[in-house]
Length: 122
Image 1 (spheres, rainbow, N blue to C red):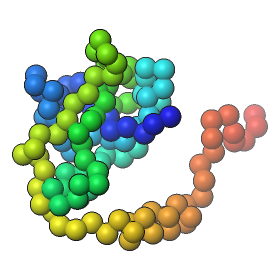
Image 2 (spheres, helix red, strand yellow):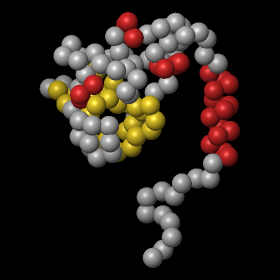
Image 3 (cartoon, rainbow, N blue to C red):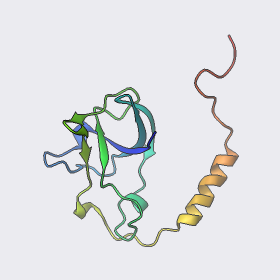
Image 4 (cartoon, rainbow, N blue to C red):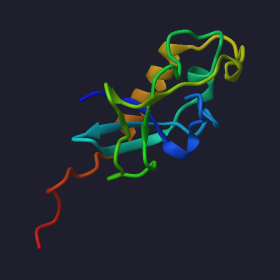
């Protein structure tokens, strides 16, 4: 599985660019449908002209930003959209190591959620 940037079909302009580049979320597509969604992308990394390590050059287009929505396809596979060059702003240096430490600390301080099929027996 590959985590992708996902956007809703109504957020794509006729030329294929994103109408609102902040209306993109991380998610998974499995068997042509949205399987999982995470929060919105972070402008400080995804739309930062000073940080070329990550951007919105390829956003898979789905019918809606909700679990179960269908992915949109073209003749050669998934339909993609992108953020226009004008959407990127110089936002300064990104402390990737510091952000990773914060993310790991947050993960270890939160109890794990039950997986599908796990939980209290009924």
